[in-house]
Amino acid sequence: MKILVTGGCGFIGSNLIRHLLASTIHSIVNVDKLTYAGNPNSLAQFADDPRYTFCRLDIADPVAMHDVFSRHAPDAVIHLAAESHVDRSIDGPAAFIETNVVGTFELLTAATDYFAQLTGDKADEFRLLHVSTDEVFGALGATGQFTESTAYDPHSPYSATKAASDHLVRAWHTTYGLPTIVTNCSNNYGPYQFPEKLIPLMVIKAISGQPMPVYGKGENVRDWLYVIDHARAINRVLTAGVVGQTYNIGGDSERRNLDLVLSVCAILDELHPRAGGPYSDLIEFVADRPGHDFRYAIDSTKIRTELGWEPKFDFETSLRQTVQWYLTHRSWWQAILDGNYQLERLGNATTTNKS
Ligand code: NAD
Ligand code: TDX
Image (cartoon, rainbow, N blue to C red):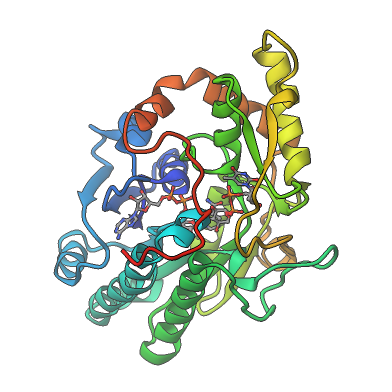
């Protein structure tokens, strides 16, 4: 099966491609613009693999997208390319509109034109799987979970653009008959995550002896999903999911941010002891994120009962392995920090930079 993956040089995309290529039935065409978050080093092991093709392009470029479909004739598309960081969407939403909304529109247009000329099994089996987020559902209070029928209520520029893209994908199914499926998942963690995100940021800040910035009081709750469990779920939905449907994917591992950061500190105390006291001494409470969603939690009953998927990675073990990965892959993240980003606070803006 030849799969066109968009955003394959990002965190989830690179882990997904590694997961898919571990099964010999797949070949991958990876379409990625290589924004600040795209990192070919994450897939260096496949540079000479005949099953892997990399195309550096922007999904918002209609000519390039039509060309990639006609040249590679994929059996399926998994769409991950996006601007993905909530804090950056507060500082500069324009790129989120351009990629998440316009880019998804151009991808859908190219995919629909391509699909229209498919026949037989190739047409029957074609799928476009759109990878989205639980943030489209807004924020929960202390109780409850998001289901597939929870009303959309996005709060950040990021989640608003992801919500728009979900609606476009569903509209292209009902209006043009494109065989699409949408997944909405919770916070992923694991290796190869850009260090602006909570877990790698905390590990790197800690071992660099810098303050570890917890927003507000650290009481916000996220539902953590190991990235390989997410890759397994995507593969399952692609092969067994019902066209036109949505599937929620969650890790059943809710943690308050402060408790998660304390767990990271405890793991580091053991694996990489700090002279001068425990890592938790570095925790600093900082100004909250504007519009900070209080709690996310996913009800994944549908994918469990209908498709037989469930998370298989235990949170405590996988968090420990993830911390260990960042300790042993310093050159991977150091190369990022040698560029334009040095772990600075993002998303604290009171005004919007439109560019
Ligand atoms: P990421 O920021 O690590 O990677 C995004 C990738 O998309 C990068 O390789 C980047 O170069 C590429 N890209 C960006 N704009 C592009 C464009 N215009 N054309 C082509 N490529 C472009 O993101 P991630 O964390 O791997 O997330 C992947 C997808 O999963 C996103 O759609 C995101 O909304 C969704 N998601 C992520 C999480 C999470 O916890 N990370 C949770 C739920 C959903
Ligand atoms: O320095 C920090 N301190 C802090 O307290 C950072 C970067 C974050 N936080 C808090 C904010 C959130 O409550 O930690 C939590 C997680 O923050 P992020 O890693 O920025 O993730 P989040 O905003 O929850 O969004 C992530 O999960 C859903 C991904 O970035 C999205 O792409 C995905 O859709």
